[in-house]
Length: 455
Image 1 (cartoon, helix red, strand yellow):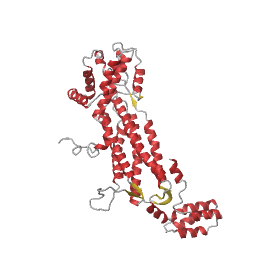
Image 2: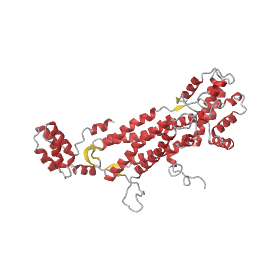
Image 3: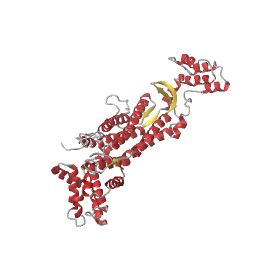
Image 4: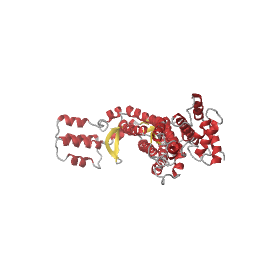
């Protein structure tokens, strides 16, 4: 069966294929190959620029550009050639080395460079840097811009709905009112914090040989400061240099990256479930689209499918991200290969994150606030003013204020009139009594509106 969106095994390459297009150049096999070529070429150029390596003189500007073009013009045809070489070598990184040597060919200016391709490197020198570049590109080019779109959509809602009163529910029970904007502002504040941490994560890399000790480097060129050379090279790629590794960079930075994304996902799951609940309560309506069907059998339904889709995809992503966090930092002795196959799943995890973010944006754009439903809920629950009344009573040292309000309100229907009658009986200063008499569930929102607008 030929591979099409209808026959793809993964929904990311099938049903959701269009939504994850931006990640394909990064996390695909092509994307990994491309970055391996970039790292190999950068290493070769760095070796040539090192004065202590006499056998590899620095390249002329045109020769260096021809090398850079191997990576800069890397194409699908080049990727297919690497796969053909790999079919013979049965080694993916060695196939990249042979591909670069093929590209150099008989070039007179580059001839001396052939055997310095992959010089003193283990495959993991190339791989760890390639994956680090993939993560950085995915974060900066795809994930952060999408997260920012969601955050700014929520921030706009927080500001627009700053004054919209809403009944709170703690433990699922009626509680002191808030505003819809403030509840959204809470999410924005959480996302802002985690986004900042994701953006600030240093992504480490290493290039120090077969077991992390520069063994081959020192034997070949003992006079060179290989630690300094390694640090300059890794940092020159825009990565954080890791001085202490085995054969593999230990992936702690990858785990920190995944955990940062996972925390963002958890906040968005929380948001998705809350909005799902508010839709169920009737606080939000969803705008209708001509031709769409909510249920195959119940014509009246408009289901909150975008938030359900987001929750489901975030859950799948976090299952993978959690496995990465538990598995990747563990490697037997100086190296085992279990990380190799696991790292190839990074794109799958971030693909599900991307699908979820797109679903959230779509869902948020369809929401319409049902102010009448929210007002009716507030009017039906005057007992939520018990907190306000007993707090003012406490201020004036009245006897057993909490207990009095508990007796009045707990498990009993309280109306505007019954609450006002109780307040009238209280021996309070006139100004405080009038303030309580003027209070309604809709106006008892504290600083919620100000907090919403300041986010």
